[in-house]
Length: 106
Image 1 (cartoon, rainbow, N blue to C red):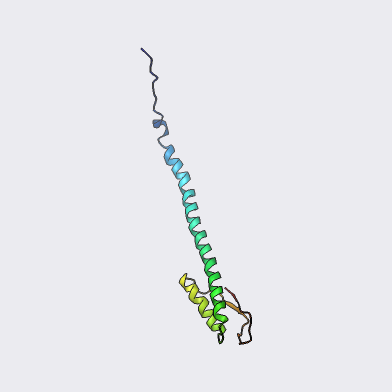
Image 2: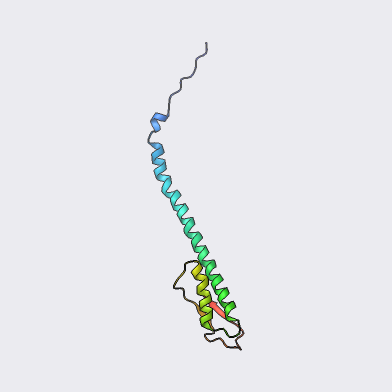
C-alpha cells in the first residue's frame, strides 16, 4: 500500500488576499480606462480643429467670401463636435478678390 500525500487547503489562509489585491489593482485599472477615454477625446478635438481650419480656408478662397463666412463655416464644423467658444483667426483680416492665400487658425 502506497502512502498518499495529504493535501492541506491553502485557501483558508488567503481568505482576504483576493480582496486586498482587488482593492489595489481596481483603481489603477479604472485610471487607465478613463485616461484612454480622455486622450481619445483630446485626439478627436485636435482633428476636429484641423478639419474646421481646413473647411474655413476652403470657404475663404471662394470669390466674394469674407471673414464672416470663414468663421461661420469653421464654427459649423466645430459645432458638430459640441465645441463652442473657439477662437478663429483669419489672415488676412479682409478678404478681397486679389487675395491669394487665406490662413485660418482655430
